[in-house]
Length: 453
Ligand code: ADP
Ligand code: MG
Image 1 (cartoon, helix red, strand yellow):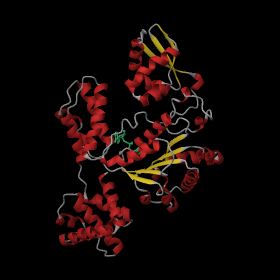
Image 2 (cartoon, helix red, strand yellow):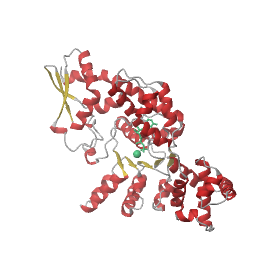
Image 3 (cartoon, protein in one colour):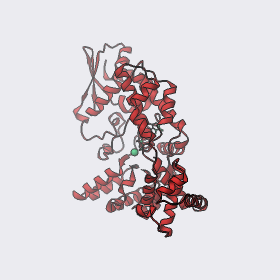
Image 4 (cartoon, rainbow, N blue to C red):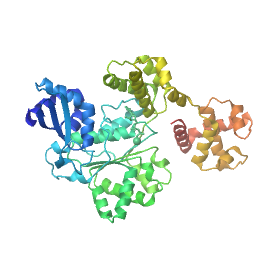
């Protein structure tokens, strides 16, 4: 079999591995040799080879056999011509048609994209519906409608997943676009390096030459003055050229402390979308999707709907924990050769289940609220009646009532031995105020998210 015939044979793999995987991992493979039962492919990097070996080697082998070849083994070797200087983010580049600007992506060096983070594998539910729709829109690569797209939400709710999905999709749909994805930390690191090496002009022109810029976890640059400054200029330059920008953070632009006001307001100019904490339906949906994957990985192992429902009920923290639980469950069950029952689940995941059972304490609420309003923890509990202290104290009382199952007298005791009527008054006051004071309503929402995240 030659590389040309392989070109036809491989198309049968689209259905098996999915379009995205096909474009990213299968198309770039070059068949260099097929003899003595060994099919050898050229790959651009050893990482690439490992990944394909681990995930697709069996598919490739059986596809070759279907086409009539004798194959016992599939091997991958790095080809020296393409092995250097190609970012992992664009593994499929070499097979694409020549571009108008050859080799341009070599200098971008974005962060590697996780091949699992695609739109196909992203489960949509009420809490992430809008974020998903906005990400899809950006991924179409059409004219820029909102700039930037600002995605925010707590840990593990899918911000990074959506950004990678946008990048993957754009690579397929609009391969000519220069898409750069990186974390804010990497942005800073590269900027500092450019300063040190006296290559700031190169840095600037590189960042100004991209078509789509995605910066993850932008809260990281808060308080880092010169990096913020540079980010601001890059941002403006790209917006002026009508280039798409996608940003993520763990909170809304206005809530990021130590971020300059001019940056905050620019970030708010586009579409700001919130990923809400998961609800039961979404968690169950995600579990079902992942379980499907594990069923094929661990052939013969079944997981019942009942166990999935149990997990969706009990693990409410974030999706990463949920995934970790499922991974461990399958690995454990297959190691010990047992069925996945509710009992086994409870044994195997005892620590995770206990952690997510953990009750929020009044002390934690007081600490977070004090931090948020910049008052001393001791003042929360102490007697001062100054408005600047009394209001945060009432916020903490309100949250304690809302988020814990403590009684008013119990809460009173934790607030320096106050009477339960004082607590009741505080709670009512905040309930009243939040209807008219939108700043307060926002504060409450943020605090709740931070405390429950
Ligand atoms: P964040 O960047 O918001 O902290 P990530 O994007 O890293 O979160 O997501 C954490 C993990 O949860 C990833 O493995 C991701 O694939 C998974 N995940 C989050 N949301 C979803 C979803 N809606 N559907 C499928 N997987 C999800
Ligand atoms: Mg992330």
